[in-house]
Image (cartoon, rainbow, N blue to C red; front, side, top):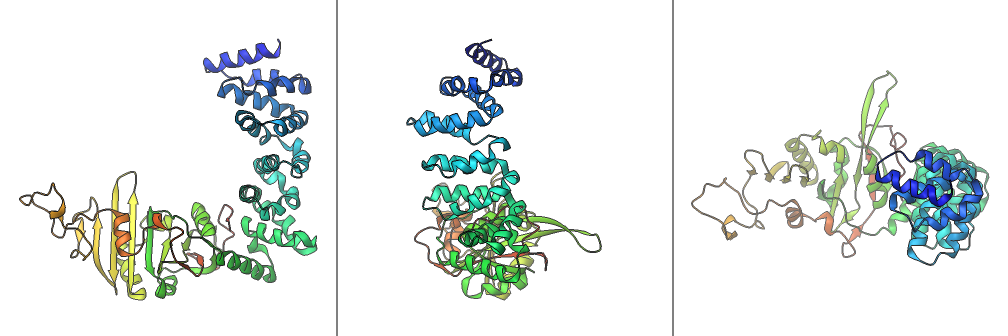
Amino acid sequence: MDQAALVAELEEALKKRESTDGIVRRLAEPGAAAVPGLLSSLTEVSRGALWGLRDALHLIGPAAFDAAVAARARADKVPDWWELGHVLRGFDERCLTRYVEALSHPMKEIRQQALGGLEKLGEGAADTLPDIIPFLNDADSYTRYQAEKTVGAIGVEGAPVLRGIRRDGPGRLRRHALTALALVGGADQLDERDRRAVERLVRLKATRDTPVELPDHRWLAVPGATYERLFEVLDLYDRVPCTISMGLSAMLHDTAEITDPEGTRHSVFRVFVTPELDGWRLVYADTPLGEMAWDVDDLLGRLSAACGQAQLFWQDAHSDSMFWAVALDGVTRRRYWRYEDPEWEGDPMDWETPLSADPDHDPEEDHEPGATLESDTNGAATALSLDPTMVGSGTVLRGHGWLATSMPGVGQAPFAGALRI
């Protein structure tokens, strides 16, 4: 059966929701001879069939890779580069050396696709790290971002290669290897000299940190002037400096399971304390706060007694539950918790809008004592400290952030995922 007939058969199978694996293999059987027709058909078929042609090209391997690179270098229309990009990023280990060669291609977009392909190979691309890590300092921001993703996908399996570069050179790659080790979490396996170097690197990056919008699902806020006391109150250990990007990426994997010398399993949490933002430090402890592992009143009481003031904000998009509270010098001053009984505790604060301001307010109805219109978490945060979603270029940033863990001696090694500096 000719190629056009096979493509038509592919489209028909997709319409009938039938398996297309056999058709894809038959499309790939002619090898290099099938490549020109498959590439030319990419923009002429349905989206589902596009993935089938892509998979056939991946089965063909090196010959398809070479032709796809040549086609991408010629492509000047949006559909061409979009489809070809999906093709270029998915070849297997047979094309490993070709990906490395493509990193030197004069066309920036092809270099980026090569990095994306190595990202998909993950641990299998560990030996190519010497070719990847220079892109961590590329002039193009997207290329730097893609290089960070690629290093992160390779993960700690690449740490021996990177440590070898730190130890033996070449010298031009040592600085890049240090950055990559920090990204993959390999810094925990460095000697003391390189640990200090990683810390200096993070501190240097932190001096150039830019305030960005932060998550608003759950967080604590304490005054920047007294925040140091929170580490003891929350039983946090082994803190290390971090940038905002590091802290946010750490929250993607904030829980690790470890086994102590006696064989007992423990859950360990990672906590991110932001730099000072408009005079406040925000604390992100997603899993402990999400599970309410800390009793709310006890937590705010101890934290405010140490720091003078403590605020907790929490909202659940699924249940529409909202919580905000502020405690002063060990005592909860004001709290709102939707769906609790009572919802409101404490006297209204000066900034709260009374119920009478609501045009639909009926003074004859029974209302919970102390209730106001200020049930919105972000609105309360704006009045009490700062709304994380409003952090941006106008926010005054001081100092650097911290990452800490809930158990001493654990460090960052047990936690999954790469930390973006």
